[in-house]
Image (cartoon, rainbow, N blue to C red):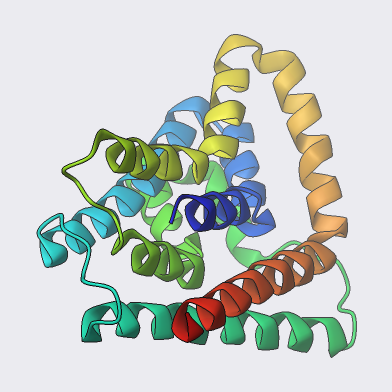
Length: 214
């Protein structure tokens, strides 16, 4: 479980879409406040999903080879295959011109509530679902699994935490460097999405097949 959560958490935190949007928020008027609203909403989403899973299992992992356990592995397998197909599709489709989405023009005047809502919209739900299916194996009677789930949520939010902290402590240099990072993310968005989708998809697919066969 732990290794799967690390792989999924890293993939979530490295996603170019939400990181680009977050940098735009930080660059806007009252950017630190809007960024904090986005960050807290993003983290709250992950915590809510994990909490719902724990309520479903009552904090106890399903027995191995039971119907719930097999269903969770099958769900991870389906998500893995879907990510592989999605990455392959994005890789094969013709390149698109690098442009700024229309919705980014509204970020300058966005309220904290809007910023918080944007975090839910940009959440990579496929990866979040994979994390939820993995969390079914958590045993809340052990401190180790509590720690693993906490680290997963923080790892999936790490890029936002780092950028928010940077802007608060060094706003002048942070804005320049983060805008340069946003430009790089914009130019490399497609290969980043393809790479993350394929790598995580192949990992989940291979690991799920192994779990089903063992």
